[in-house]
Amino acid sequence: MTMFPQTMIDTARAGGGLDIDLSKQVMFPQTMIDVAAAAAASGKKPTITFRNCKSVWPQTRIDVARAGQGCVVFVD
Image 1 (cartoon, rainbow, N blue to C red):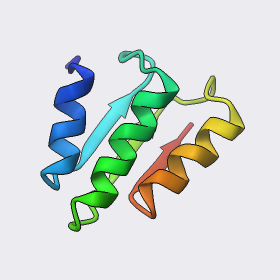
Image 2: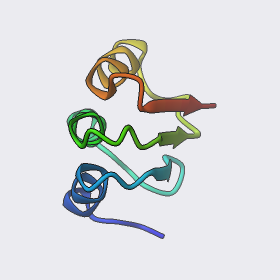
Image 3: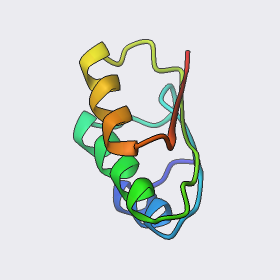
Image 4: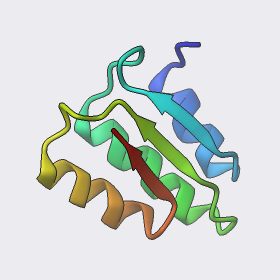
């Protein structure tokens, strides 16, 4: 299911985990960072999984992981 970026951010901020397939959901790097940061800020440490992320630059992965503070998983 495709979700709007703000819906993903709000879900993560509420402590809900997300499984985002990047082959079906297009996301800007900043949106990925915002979702990860919202998850970390929730205090509940939900898991945010990004699937099919082979096209994501290494620096973007680092930035997302840093923002997520342990909440982010990348699955190629």
